[in-house]
Image: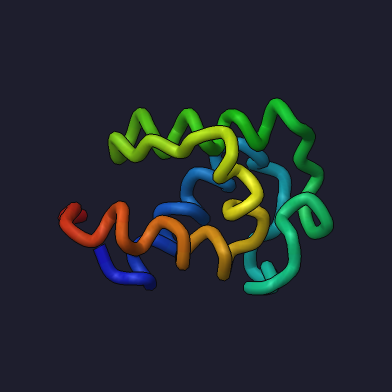
Length: 85
C-alpha cells in the first residue's frame, strides 16, 4: 500500500469508529484526540481494526506512534507496503 492508500484506510477506520466526526479538515500533524471526540476505547478500536482488516500488529509500546495521521502513516508504511488494496 502507498502512503495515500494507508491514509484512506485510516480515514475509513476513523469514520467507522467516530461516524459523527467530520474528517474533511483533519490536520496531518495534530493528534487525533485533539481533533476528534476519541477516548481510549476508541483508540483501541483503531488498533483492533488495523489488526482485523490488515493483519497489522501494533505492540502497546508503539501506540504513541499512532497519535496523528502523519505519524500513523509513517509508522504503518513499512508494515503495510506489501499489502494490496
